Image (cartoon, rainbow, N blue to C red; front, side, top):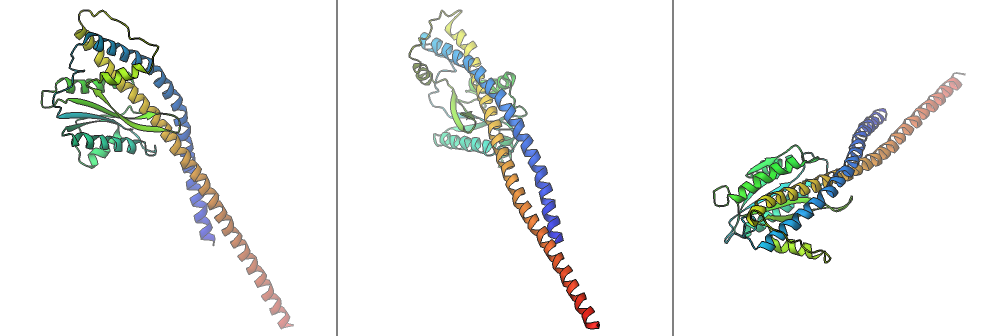
Length: 305
């Protein structure tokens, strides 16, 4: 019984140490969610106004631009997948990867060759382990992305899209990321970034019935304005997706660490009960041995008399 009690105590010490780590990670994630939410809220107005400007220029000028013109027979598509650099975030990265796999299967069923662009070490590890080709990857900033990170990613993707006629070019650009809905809900989503779907943008604008798109004079030309605006549009969309994913990652990690902390507490309680039962059994056995020895001594003394 004594050895069993030592095992219980050792396990309780080990789980208590793990509980301290998970509790600390939960608190860190909880503090970072607030900042991540503020960044998402701060990036939304810029993205919305830029979308309105791009829509006004593209629809008002009836100008054909490489970033807004559909390919006659698209054969290649790029999929940008945003995952995390670190684990311990529940199913956050796995859900995003599953969404990307579903999108890839759909695109391939349409006869398109898919090029994979990955953000985050988890996505890179997943593709590398399965020996899947990765066109380009970025790591090291998923929990705290900056606009410079988004610009670097957007630059590579826009270059691939604008060189669609070359061997490394693509006709479409899709993005898969995790949308931050609430502290308890984060949903993986996929959107087509390029070519820009004006119908989708117009539908989003129609939701605001009291707003009217502004009228612009284009200098030097509408094409020149689109050349300047559309790359910024892609950058802002990718930046917003990175921020949404970062907030989702922190929320998922906080929830996972809280669950791990709660489970550790329950396990500690269970092991403590078992340890107390084992200690009580040891005490009972010792008392029984003492009483038995005393009775035996008393019997031996009485027999000698």
